[in-house]
Length: 289
Image (cartoon, rainbow, N blue to C red; front, side):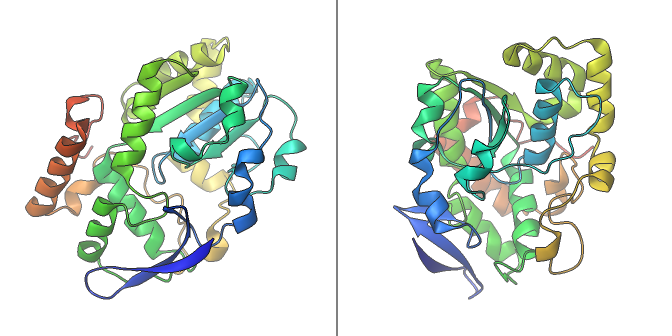
């Protein structure tokens, strides 16, 4: 894996690691990425799949509480398969909850062979783009000082870690629709609109008995404010401005404060080019709360 510089339209740049056309964060260990296909999955594993800044920590915590029938937030931080050596996962008791941003072609095949459960969470790409911009701008591993206007084409063209949101989402949605693998699709906005119903459906997929009490416990514990105050932010040491790169605001519709009319048209065109505009569950026109 080689580090490469990606430049925006005004000369700003960020460093990524590249392997076979796929981009990764510069702070991953190359040997971890290159050895992913040797990862040993278990049938009881639950793999949480998201494109970056799509509610990863929230969904991971909801799944962890369901699987463990926990009344409180889990003590352990999120376990992402791209950032930790396999020995960490080998030592975890079953059932393991594992996080990834990987596109479908890079998923360790053993998850598919073992028919591990996969929870796919998709978020409004307009909010993803804004959140990704704030995230990258606040982490010293990138040292990116470009403006939102300069960053937006990078997002649109997939010149970021984990490449194109559109390709990532389109491919995973096709996998979910095909039905060959155990994939449960959930939308970030659904948790905001009807948390208990969305979590109940997720529990059924996970084969967990979701009592009313458990659903209420999970709802209370996984509020944005509670998670921000109680969960360890593993990225704080990398923050450039002292604020949390992970827990920014957790809102739906923050994009309305950022997008220009031209950018909205470009985003809509990209959605149409990929055929994603036909999926009305991708609520990319949702306005702010």
